[in-house]
Image 1 (cartoon, one colour):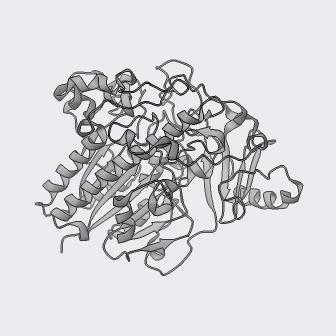
Image 2 (cartoon, rainbow, N blue to C red):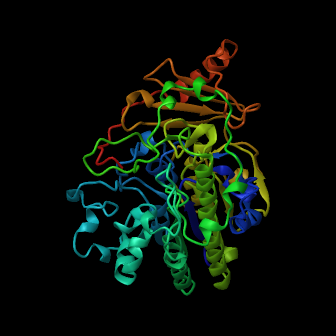
Image 3 (tube, rainbow, N blue to C red):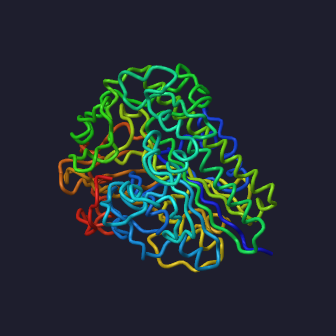
Length: 507
């Protein structure tokens, strides 16, 4: 029998509770739910970093950012580090990456010759390059979200060559409705859905699946969607599928931010374009916003548009599953769906992402089906993006190097119900060293410390405050608990605020 294939589907900035299979009562993610129904759902799966590039590098290397070196956006991943896709390629798999990879900085200088930089795509003939790249035999890159996607990459080149009239339709000025007046990043995209990058990614992935169905070697395919990352700008019909007035209200507890570290009293400007040109003073990663100056109506539209983007992704996942079924490969293919990190989406009175390691940012969906995985498996163990490399290699019968993660196959097949007592996360800031923070998470608690600002801290009782709205760090009665968790961090993840890897751009 032909060796099993593998498809890794990744969304960008999708929180754990975004899917109907994880309890969202607004979502209709029947296709992602099909993956869960055919296999396993991991209900306590976390990333060790809430920012795009560090988390994505962890997914492919199985290492903490402090070990793989991509400690913040604007830094490049070392191509010589062992990673999942190199392992598949060396084992004879045909490997392909389609969509957003984000292993190199968008603003890397031209002399670095990095294919995921804007500068690379400013040179003649760049669109002819296809790889190899980080273990992928070939790639089809989408770089950036919404209107940023038209600046560079294979999709931008394809769009300009085949549908140049669509480029301007990505801009908010082309929106069929007026743009939100109190949040720069909310509009309805005028791009025809069939030409939108979400469907372009699916088209390229399906072409690859159909070609590989006639080949003898197995394949490994990475399908990576830039959405539902902000801007909140899906095309029709997806921007109109969910009625803003019916969206659930964000979870906010009065006075909760006053109990948090002082930097949360600040915030980005909701009418300022988040991205900075090369050479400008960068803001902190994630462009965290307080929602005080955003109307309830605009916030509801942003939430509705997020659901629309997720629905568009779900529809394309359905197309991928159908392509596998048509090629008679569905039963012999492992299909994994997850996200690099989450989105605050108004919870705590905050939007986008940033330094605070809230559950809405660290906990992400993770569903997996394939040969030998029992349908309908539901897992409550603490798992991490650190575990993906070792687990996939094990399922495919491939050797994997030692990583910071754990092979989850004993959990998946029922030999154990737990793989660890604690998860760890670490955030390295772009601008203010005081924001460097470390977290330890158990089933019962989350402690976060700021080694460069000892007066700051976060402690949440997850049994009684599952969505982390009431910081107990300053409460005397919980000092022993905080001290015990601090000792765990000292032993397992001692502070390391400085990482020696060159910053090549703001992001």
